[in-house]
Length: 120
Image 1 (tube, rainbow, N blue to C red):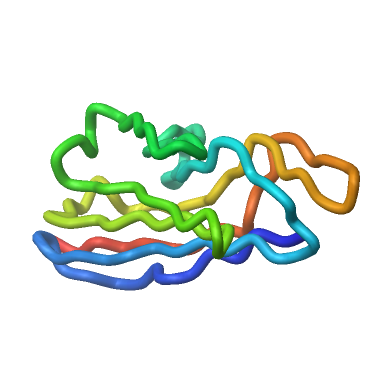
Image 2 (cartoon, rainbow, N blue to C red; image 1 turned 90 degrees about the vertical axis):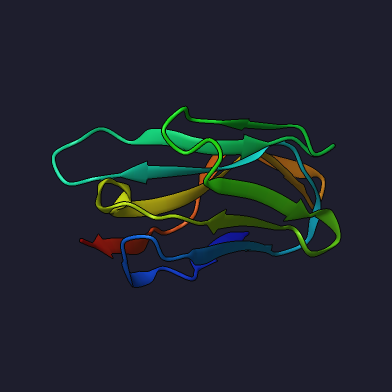
């Protein structure tokens, strides 16, 4: 099982990026999926999370600017980031709280990070 994140890059303040994170392997179901970020010298923090049914929760700092969504058929979670600010600069990580596959499960599974840099 792998979580492969993509879509990071360099963007000017006010711009947009869309992150994707696809889970691969013999996956039957994934519960909550989310995005976290870690800026240099800071702890990893929650950005947004989405349940399998589509309920969402956001950090206050991104409400109204970021939108999390998922495609259960593709085992993929997305993060649409608009009105980006320099303080959004961080490595963004996707997370799946439980992945069910091949009769087993994985808990608190992380993908590799993708760098987002917002210039002022």
